Length: 73
Image 1 (cartoon, rainbow, N blue to C red):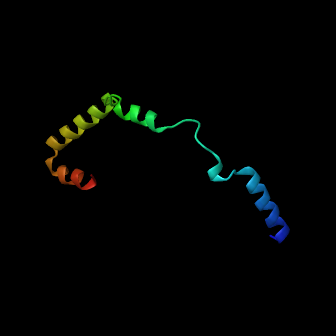
Image 2: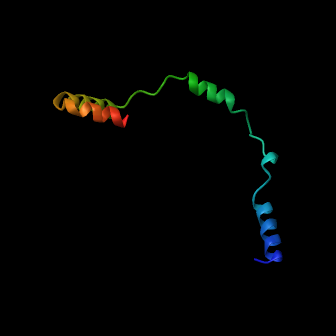
Image 3: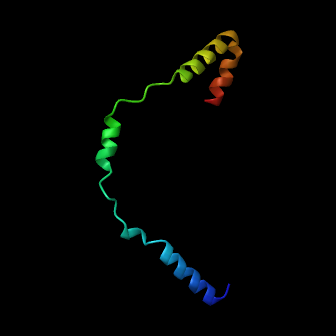
């Protein structure tokens, strides 16, 4: 790439990407984040309970698998 192409590439990039300090958020996002943190946590889906139950049954039937499960945690 010659110098003319580099200058053209720099010019195109400056046009396409505004400087990072020029943009400001439209509103403050922190109060929305605090409301989300204070909200009631999401319920645990039934599929998670089914997986936990299956894992417990598997551990009871095959107790030698418990160290393997603990290793992969």
